[in-house]
Image (cartoon, rainbow, N blue to C red; front, side):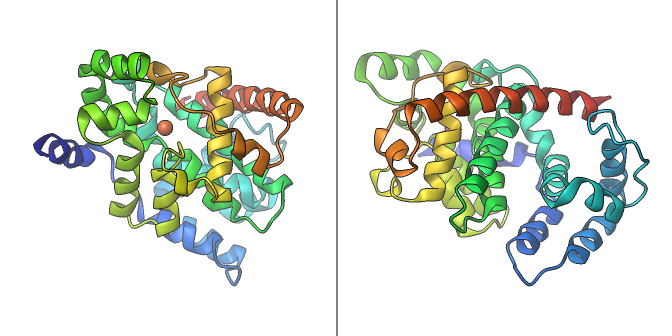
Length: 285
Ligand SMILES: [Fe+2]
């Protein structure tokens, strides 16, 4: 129990989430909101505005005109890309660090998270069933935030965790829980609650590996699981836990994803990963 408390207390190592993100989620989740609400939200934060404009004018977007206001950025980039930039600026720092316990270098978890989130968003948009695509994108972006907190504990106990994975057929998150008392997904759910995200967001982060059978009928969770599984097939930014998660075939059936679709999703993920790499260079230059 003491071990769990010590791990949970380490949530303090995270850079606190900006209140902008909570307000952003309210705006994009409310059909009554206008683009003006979004522009005003960003303009209230001068550092965020400056960062956004700098990035909009970077070579990553290749715009031929100079972007000089948030409204201008919204017109040129569209809602999806502007919301993504706000989220990446407001949440990125935590995910950019090296996660040594998982064998991840600086930026690797960030790129994996961004590419997975983009894949999940595009899948949700193409399979239009009234999904909240911003919720799916954000939950997928932050699904492994618990790793940032627990990585040192995982690193110290990696041999025990791997033993359970290899000899007892535990998934990596089950082995984390067995050895440390809590796994990175459940910890991520606690972080989402502490950051005052919606109950649905906390649910999606907590259950992104679908280890609890009762969560496997939730379609949004299935989409995040799909994106995470595809990223695992590409072996990108995954680290020490690589393929040590269960594959639930019923999720692919539920989402109408065939074997050829999976190949296409893998290719799409690689494109998203390449673009995330370029975006990271633009953010750091
Ligand atoms: Fe995970």
